[in-house]
Amino acid sequence: MMSDVQDNAIRLRDSDNVAVLKKTIKAGATVNCEGVALDCRQLIPAGHKIALTSLSDGQALIKYGQTIGFAKGSIQAGDHVHTQNVVMGDFGRDYEFCADYHAVEMVPDGQRRTFMGYERENGRVGTRNYIAVISSVNCSASVSKYVAEHFRNEAFARKYPNIDGVIAVTHKSGCSLLPSEPLKMLQRVLAGMARHANIGGYVMIGLGCEVNQISHLIRDQKLDADTPGGAAPVSLNIQALGGVRKTTEAGIKAVGEILDRVNAHQRSAQSIDKLLLAMNCGGSDGNSGITANPALGYASDQLVRQGATSVLAETTEIYGGEHLLTRRAVSESVGQKLVDLIHWWEDHVKLYDASIDNNPSYGNKEGGLTTIYEKSLGAIAKAGQSPLAEVYRYAEPIKAKGLCFMDTPGNDPVSMTGLVSGGCTIGTFTTGRGSVYGCKPSPCIKIATNSPLYNWMEDDMDINAGTILDGSETVEEVGRRIFEKILSVAGGEKTKSELSGMGDEEFAPWMIGPVL
Image (cartoon, rainbow, N blue to C red; front, side, top):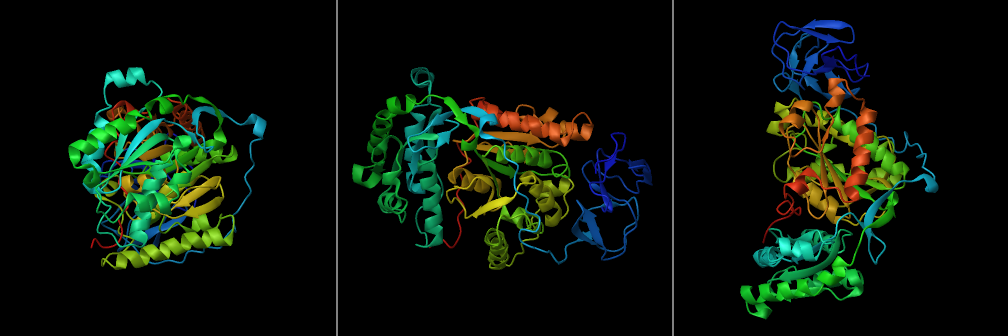
């Protein structure tokens, strides 16, 4: 449990043999933690770990009540515990499917919250109302941008107040792909954007000779049966139309023909169970698993209790802690899906002479995270305590209610692209180092793990979870603020990233396999 607010270090569980510092402590200064006073043996930065007891070589380091690594040599009480004296190692993880499953106590229908959203013809509900110009291949990316840029002006905004904008959905792939999972994955991503609840209409633009043919995309993903407004998908071909200028003109005309229809959509009161929340973390630090992530986990649990969907991702950043999710899976088959993903990743990285456990980035380590196990245990806190309802492949359409998991890399833009393409209509992003991520067409709420970061980057951070460290709020209180912010942003409130114009360049589909 958290220590008294007068302490300058936090031990998260009674069994932990390390604590996390609330502020930077100089060598020789006293560290107080739950009534125990330690002499700090080296300067230790805020968010980093201090040894609470002496540890022998190879002894397990315990944080969150779980193994995060092993001592490299002897460690004395009061030592800085980090990359210089910690190593990875294998340890047993009991997946014990469903052992910790507990049914959710649902909020009765009549007491559930609502938000102001855009109801679509197919029954989905959006939090934004965009028009998308979707490239089938990188070769048509510039033309797609030219079309979208034509509609970025004040006159357009005044004439079509219910349209959030025209966005170009571009990427670096689409050709030289293997006609198997690499192509199928890209098609899932692009189809997910086309049918996304935050997209009121779209136009597709291709070059003409690419592997990812638009006609095949429409056929294989059945887009002709799921197009906004009931019209056939509009697709343009640069080679068939006679080049860049002619295709740009045709694209502008095609978008112009759907403006009135898209603008006719208006917000109306919608049940909270229509929300699909994406949860990501990036630029994490030693505070992430103490403040922002567990607070987001509380908000996620509240959404689940109200019938909504909350989706965790980043398979490489639950590694070492996946057993905490399999133990609360709703069924053995759901738990096994997650274990299979872990094994796939272990095999996948071996193809590149790498290992999955070397994941924390430079910024993560600077912020106090030492191993992937430690990072994963903090990241999983975003999932709260709800049962694991379903596991999805990258960009697979999300249909289940409750807490779900999607297979994505830990890379922020790639992970969020998969979540949004899977149908998430709003995103949350916790950060301890200062990620400025934005993501059109889904708004993204940024949650700072510490007050210095929030104060330094207030123009980019939506919520300060550092108040938990400061002692002015509890995890539950910050979680309630996150929950209310999710509903407010879903109903139209602009996020900091939206106000600064972020989100046009962050679309980044996962590219696996060789480029032929």
